[in-house]
Image (tube, rainbow, N blue to C red):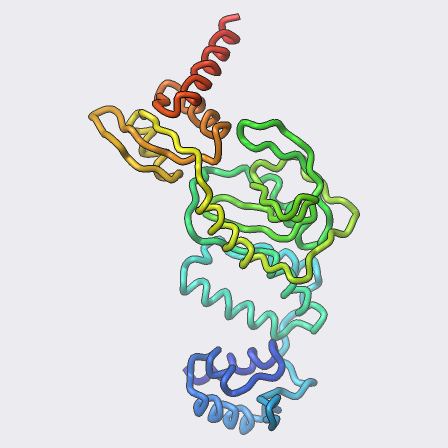
Amino acid sequence: MKADRLLSVLLQLQAHGRLTSRDLASRLEVSERTVHRDMEALSASGVPVYALRGSRGGWQLDEDWRTQVPGLDEIELRGLMMAQPRIIGDAPLAAAAERAYGKLMAALPNALRDKAASIRQRLFVDIEGWHGSNEDLTSLPVVQDAVSRDRKLRFHYCPPGRERSERVVDPLGIVAKGSSWYLVAQTPRGYRTYRVSRIEQPELLDVACARPPAFDLASWWKNSMQQFQGIARYEVTLRLDRKVAKWITTRRIASIIDESADHVTVQIQFDDEHEACFVALGMGSRAEVLAPAKLRQRVLAEAAAVAATASA
């Protein structure tokens, strides 16, 4: 509708300052001729919009003119920007969220507008599924706080099958992927990714973190995922109870080799032997490791140690 489009024109100009007819036409998905007619309509209604000629010209609102919304302080802004909806994969809701974001950005003072844009660059939502299950996100609020404040973060990290250790990192952003959340951070060894559910005792330090000026969270994550998918994985052959097989094949990269009335034989990819052993032991008697032989021996030895401990 024309009224909605005119409002969108106003919000775009308030948020971005000067825009060419081509820019506005692209953003609003209309022709440049329609943009010119809309500008004439705005001007006729008393909105102070004017055209600037030349190679760097375009359309611009009078700098002193602005629609008003209730103000936000920095704490409210940070909370809003870090609490984006997890259902962003729904196209209509995603479009509505973008419109709301545009309205907010248009109405904010310059200082808070820059802050909002900066915070938004620190959160990326990857809508594709993952093999995670229910996540313990008790550490997420502290992680979000560290990311939005650009403060160093200290925590203990415990990957599956490995020892717990302390880390001090420079938080760069948060990624939501499926039901899992990840912290992307800079460390002395370069960029690293930490699963939030494995972060324990997070502590916000009173030290500013070093943020690379050219770092782009969305681009880095997408490149990281491409590299991750190309890495040679640790492949395991398991004979599983049918119910367990149904559960694990919806959460991991797997292919079915053979099926019977009660069992399914599958090949499943893990990060390494430690993770494979951890998962196989967790499934108990409902899983039998067929290959590789080294993993089978390790699982049997671990199970025997557990049995010996229980009977002692």
